[in-house]
Image 1: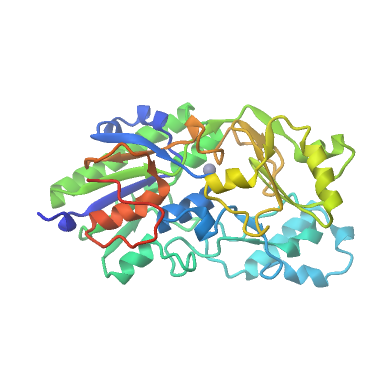
Image 2 (image 1 turned 45 degrees about the vertical axis):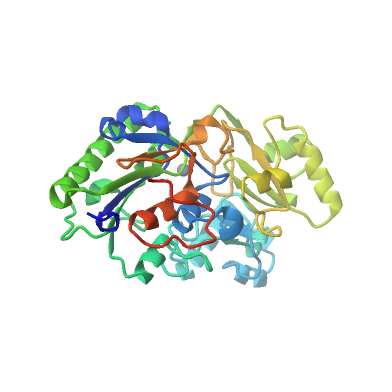
Length: 398
Ligand SMILES: [Zn+2]
């Protein structure tokens, strides 16, 4: 059997760390298991890199929220007089609901709720990801695995790629979904480990019980492939690890303690990042003075961002980006209050608990660390398709 005629079964686990495999005896029995190196950022950056084979400094998706007054779906607020006078949590929720109902974005996150940002800044912001992962034009200029396979007329099936919202979703909803034929590529998307790990940590009993269950579901599919097609390539991987939270910082209190007000600045807050924009050089100096008092983090410099292949995008993602060390989060973020968060990711890839996993039934020619950008070229290679020049990743299997 030629290599290109072997079907490939890929299983993606969101947020599975190598230690999680202790609850997954089937995956642990695979011939090759190794850590996978993640990227500096969250799902947005990871997904775009694993689907396109290039780093965030090229595909341009780093954080979910960005400064983009030209494209903001909240631009209509500019015509609303006295916005600051009506600003309150109920007003914010109402404005969000109204805007989201008219917003054409089809991405997984759509237009997420904004909780902690004064309404007067909303016409400045937009999301970076506006289309779903498998749609045409997901990242302009960088075709995804889905676009490449469609262009090459290679049939594929996806299982578990749901679009958020209500209704049955998750891997248990597709556990028994029949595959009338086994196509060259089957993609099983398993989102559960990330959400459960955020809530209970990956070491928590609830998460471990689900990992055992997921292991059984994947084994059942594996056995099905064995009986229906005989030989096939199996590749399971995750995008990042998980790190238990030990310390929380309220960013608004931080500025108050220095007799300043964070709301004075256009700002966006992710769990581990505070991103700021300034009207004057004095504002920047003042913010830098406040942040100098925070020993749990530091301002990302150009050298670090270049090394990690991320790019602030001419200020789109922040004129100043303050990073919190692994294990610390901001309790108040743009999205809400993070009260249920007990574990987080998005920290520097060099932290050992930032690693994802890479597992296969194939052999590997080298021990070179597998990265997210290697996933696409590896798949194309296994399917017998040419690997395009100019990708940041490369095939990693023999
Ligand atoms: Zn997550």
